[in-house]
Amino acid sequence: MSSSLLTRTVIEQGELRAGLDSDFMEILDRAFSHEELSVADGERLLRAEGEELQALVGVADEVRRRRVGDIVTYVINRNLNFTNICVGSCKFCAFRRSPGDHDAYVLTLEQIAAKVREALAFGATEVCIQGGLHPDFELKNYLGILQTIRKISPDIHIHAFSPAELNHIAHREGMGVEEVIKTLRDAGLNSVPGTAAEILVDRVRSIICPRKITTDKWIDIVKTCHRLSLPTTATMLYGTVETLHERAEHLALIREIQHETWGFTEFVPLTFIPYNTPLWSDGERSPPSIVENLRVHAVARLMLAEYIDNIQTSWVKLGPQGAQLMLCAGANDLSGTLLEENITRAAGGERQVMMPEQLRELILQLGRTPMQRTTTYEFV
Ligand code: SF4
Image 1 (cartoon, rainbow, N blue to C red):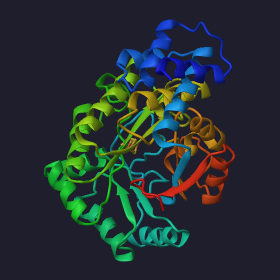
Image 2: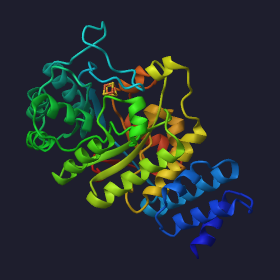
Image 3: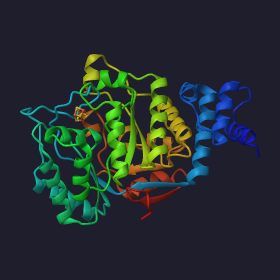
Image 4: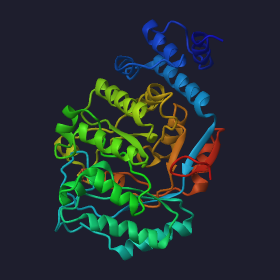
């Protein structure tokens, strides 16, 4: 079956009429033929409306099925946000606090140890650790966290410290980032969350996170992690002030990095939850609509096809039903149990934990096969 015919078959299965815009169809055909989509292609797909949207979602779902089959993965993990004190000023963030704020906190090593023990008892294979950029935290504080966890478990996967945190440590210590990463790796760090990416376009960053690392710095740190055998995830925070073109640029940049390093394990689209954030106070705005979420997940699948197999959907951002929908639009991973979630909750998110049985049930309801995975996507 030719790719063009296959595309149309998918669309017909969705009971769509013929007669969609021919340029739009041509882009979907090329995606089916394993051709790399350009930024302009991605931007066009991100504008899909009505029947185009149904076609886009159908094709992304089919490309997902061909790449990774019907298995939907999830990880049993625990989130651990060790402090909310932060020198940053990101306008999309409702989590940060200043020293002295009544609800500012720093977890002690004993509290961290207790949370890790709880995670192990729960069957977690991963702890995901991130915090604010605390003005007084030095390398030894981050090493203390790793050593505390390693004393309790030599095996649990430590997925920790975003590129912004790694840069913060290097800056604080007057060290090179590479040296910082090596030191943390040698103390037990296994992989790094590809957060702090937001949108990797400096125009956007200068508005929403002017004091955070630049696009080039993020790329440099992530590539350094990959070179030092630390895999990372890749994320995209969408729905703040970026244009559709900038969203597509971000996806193309992630693809370019992957082409060079093959160090990304997954791509995670993160929808912006505005409540309680400075952007919300500047003028009320809504989170991206479900339609917009569908477009982003589907276009991520198509633009990253051949490069990143795992497209994650975040139940903590989208809710369980929203995440289920994204699994029908190109996503194949349902994230993790989390046990505790502070960052989205601060911005108005409702849920903090999902039991493994709940994740499996959501997947089974779609007629797909649930599979527990490790952080690096081996099946458990
Ligand atoms: S997103 Fe991170 S770096 Fe930015 S203000 Fe919030 S806690 Fe700080």
